[in-house]
Amino acid sequence: MTLPNYLDSSLINGLKVMFEISANSMSIFSKYWLSYTETILQFTDSINSKNYTSSSSADVADPYSYFFSPYTFLSQHFIDASNLKTNKRLRSKDFLQNFKDYIEGIAKLDSNQKQNFGYSSLSNVDSLIDQSSAFYNNNLVSINQTPNKVLTRIGKTRILHYFSDSNETTPSSTKDAMPLLMVYAPINRYHILDLSPNRSIVNKFVSAGFDVFLIDWGEEQSKDKLTISNYINDINQALEIIGKATNKEKINLYGYSWGGTLCLIYCALHNSKIQSLILQSANLDFDKDDTVIAEWMRSFPVEKFNDEFEEMFGHLIGLAFLMRNPVVHSTDRLKYALDTKEYDIFQFVQNLWKISMWITNTPDLSGQLFRQFVIDLYQKNLLLKNQLSIEDKGKVNGQKEITPIDLKKINVPLLNIIGINDDLVSPKSSIPISEVVASKDKKTIEFPSGHIELCISYDAHQNLWPKVVDWLQSKSSTKSK
Image 1 (cartoon, helix red, strand yellow):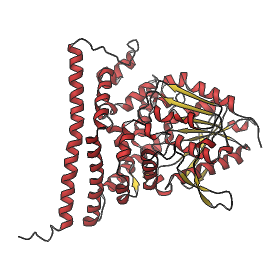
Image 2 (image 1 turned 180 degrees about the vertical axis):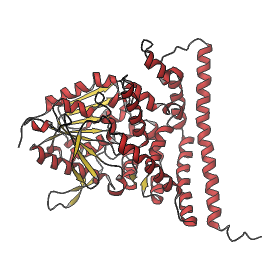
Image 3 (image 1 turned 90 degrees about the vertical axis):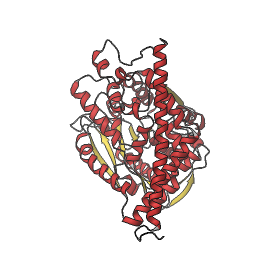
Image 4 (image 1 turned 135 degrees about the vertical axis):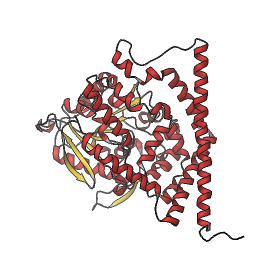
C-alpha cells in the first residue's frame, strides 16, 4: 500500500515531531500538577493539625495593603510550600530531560514548517507580541520617569542623560559633579530602575548630585548586539563620550543583573577608566547559581535551538520566568506594586501598569549572545575560571583583538549588592565576586529582598539605597581633567 503524494516523508516527520512535543508537554505539566497537588495536601494537613499560622505579608493595621495583597488570598505559607515543591520537581533529571526534548522538538517542528509551508509560526507569534506591546511601552511606560534626554546614539543603543528637574538643569552644571554610568541587563528594559519619583534608583543618584547616564540597549538588540563583545564595546564608547562631555578621566560604573556581569567583564579590560564599581544582583559563579532558571539554562539545547532560530525570542524568556511557578508568579505585578507602598491611588495604578509592561517587554536577544551566556557562562562557568575571551576593540587604529578576561585585574573600589531572597540570581553566585577581584576597598551588602524588590520596594529605598549613595559619594573623586 502506497501513501498519497501529499503524505510525503517530511509531513510524516512533522506529525511525529508534533506527537513528541505533545508527549513532552504532558509530562512537563504533569509535574506541575503533582507539585500543586502535594502543596495542597501539605497545606490541608497543616490546617487540620493546627500547625498552620497565617503569615500574610500585609500589615493588618493597613487595610488597603491587606485587602489587595495576593497573600490575603494565597497565604505565604502556601506560597513557600508551593515554591519548595515546584523547585524540587523542576530541577529533577526527569523534568530537565523533558524540557530539553521539548525545546529540541520546537526547533525540529519549526524546521519542518519552513520546509513544507515556508513560514515559522514561533517567529510570527513573537512578531505579533512585539507589535502589540510596542505602542503601550513607547507611549505609557515613561510616565513620571526622571527627566532625561538622549546624549548620543551608538547604533541603536541610546545613552540617556538625566536631569534634576524638567528645566534641564543638570548635575554637570556643578563643576565637581561625578558622572555615573548605569548599565542595565539586556533582558527586559531599564524602566524598573526609574519606576516613579519616589521609587527610582536613577533619581536617588540624581538627587544626590551625581551626573547620571544610562545605557538603553533598545528593543531591537538581536539585530546589532550579536555577542558579548558588542555590549562591551558599546560600554567603552559610552564611557569615552561621557568622559569628553564631563571632562572627567574616570567614571563610576553601576551594573544590574546581567548588566553587572557585563560591567565585571568591562572593568577587567578597562580598569583604569573606572572610579568605582557598583554591582547589583550580578552573576559570577554560575555553577553555584541554584535558581530554577540557571538549572534550565544548564540543560538548554542552545546549539540546536540557534541552528534553527537566529535569535532568542523575548516572549519565551518572559514565559520561562512565569513557568518557575505559574500560580505564584502570575501575581508578581501586583506583589511588586504593593511592595512600593505608594498608596496614592493614581501612583499605585501607574506603578502597576508600568510593572506589568516591564514584565511583558523582554527584547529579543541575538542567538549568538544567548549561546555565549548559556554555554560559556551557565554551562562552562568560564568567567569565574578566567577562561572567557572577548573581542575587544584595540587602542591602535580601532583594530579588534581577542582578549582574555582576568578578574584579578579589577582593583577599583567595589560595592556588591545582593538580594538574600533573590530567586533569579542566586546569592551564592554573587558572593564570590568580592573574593575574586583584587580590589582592596570592597564591601558587600546583603539585603533581605528579592531581585526586583531591590529596585522598587519601599524597604529598599528607605534602608538600602541611601547607604549606597553614601558609599558612592565617599569613593567619588572630584578631580577633573
